[in-house]
Amino acid sequence: MSSPSVDTLPVSAPPPTASPTAEPERFTLHAWTTARRGVAMSARLLTVGNLLFFTAWLLSDILEGAETLKAEPLIWSLILGGGLPLALVAALRSRARATLEVGASTLTLTLRDGARLEIPLDAVESVRPWRLPLPGPGLTLRLKSGRALEYGLELEDAVPLLVALARQESSLGAAVVHPLVRYGRARRELWRKRWYHLVLKLVVFPLVPAGIFFRAHQYIAFGGPFGEYQLNGLTAYLRSFGRYYAPVTLSLLLIACFWRGVAELVSLAAARFVPSWTRGVRRSAEWVCRLVYYAGIMAFTASRFLM
Image (cartoon, rainbow, N blue to C red; front, side, top):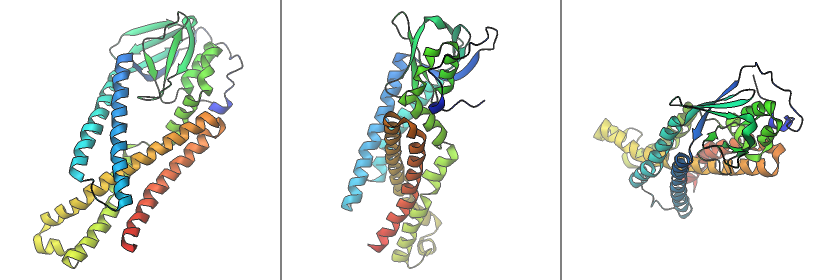
């Protein structure tokens, strides 16, 4: 069953009271302790900082027409400053996997190890989105005792959960119009994150500009597209291609990360300042990213032969 749109959700009107005998609604999410979330946030920020540093270096090289950023140190830096932190976040997220059941009078949080935590609904004062959506968008349950629930609840699209809470107590669904909730829903619905999209973007597409540069090198150095193969054999030919493919792929990875950051910032600003444009801005940002990445890279490749 699809959830109602954020922009049309009647959160101010008292929702119908759920039947006491109704089955509880169940949501899969990630439950983070403060310590684990702190580690995951630090790992995410380390990755972002690492990517920003090398993206700035790459842009500087492009503007100056230099090639000071070498493939080998970049690979090791991306592995140590990007791959390992992301692997740590993935491991922590796996351990944080949990389910939340929203019943007529009780919230039941079941952790991955089987531990269960039951919270009476009348003990919950409010539900607040995280101020910083890291390691992903999430919610904090504030209790009437003045404390927060010891587990933060990460879920990319919080709207279905907030709607379920509003059915039991209307005030608990008020955060459905919060900018970060709008941002999270639009992000989940409109950002392509399938593995084959990443393979096409970061593995297959770089073959095109790399192949163009490699072919030009073969004509210049060996007089034809297969000159090095005929002269030195297949191993030398493939090794030579790898010397073009590796830096092109790494450069495109940095460029993709840069434009991903731009898209997220623009989408977040739209959700904050013009809520009714949240979906439209997100959709436009995604298309602009694709256009700049694919068409822009090919235009840049062509310019290297025309200038």
